[in-house]
Length: 166
Image 1 (cartoon, one colour):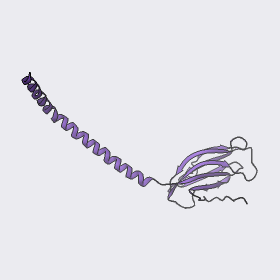
Image 2 (image 1 turned 180 degrees about the vertical axis):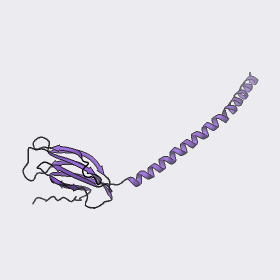
Image 3 (image 1 turned 90 degrees about the vertical axis):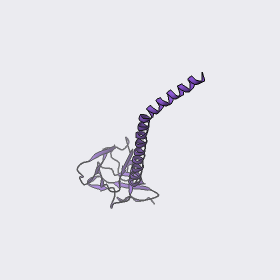
Image 4 (image 1 turned 180 degrees about the horizontal axis):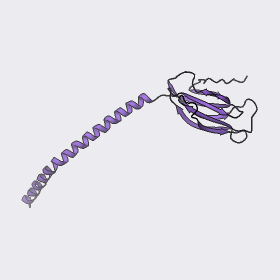
């Protein structure tokens, strides 16, 4: 028996799938906020129903303004039936898909951990490292400035010792 697709994302070992149907009503990526990034990897014409020669145009809107849309792909039977995509949508982003044409489109992808907290930790440690390196560089500059006189004295002292030997 064939598995029916719904407009809800399905989870299966990090995999998700969503069917977007043509029409005026947008299809939300999520029914409720999640904790993971959803990465969209592919759009493909759904094998159900009659395929049409007319293209299906998939677009996305992010945020509450569903009128601002960005085209992701044009899919047409016999010409371009699937399209690789690599877009990640954060857990707090309100994402809607819009489809014009006559054929439904299947979206597939995977879940990924939200790295925001890791990024902040990395940025903190990077900032600390930069500050430490800048501090060391400043100390080296100070040592070089005060060390120039010392080096000069050492050099003249070394020359004097060489002169005494010869």
